[in-house]
Length: 135
Image (tube, rainbow, N blue to C red; front, side, top):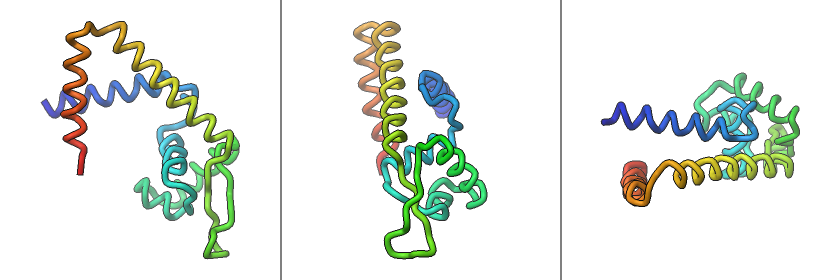
């Protein structure tokens, strides 16, 4: 069951990602952009630690996002030697568009592919999945 669940969740995530208008972003770029949106400004080192990658790799990701004007550099509030990265207004609009596209795809898939009883079963399964990921 664990293998099947893992495979299905992976397929679901790929389908939702494909519905996204930012499909040209790599999963790592999307993850960093989302992390900056939810967690606020962060340094390269902090982002690298959070994403479990090397700072050199994080610099490449940040450069790509900055080039697209989805993030910007700001001075660190307490350490003048460091730079924080934060999401721009354009980045916020992009994140909102991605979330809306994914949500729309999922709502449509549920409405068109599942009957009422299956939707009820899915709601129950969703509650169980929430319990699995709670701390």
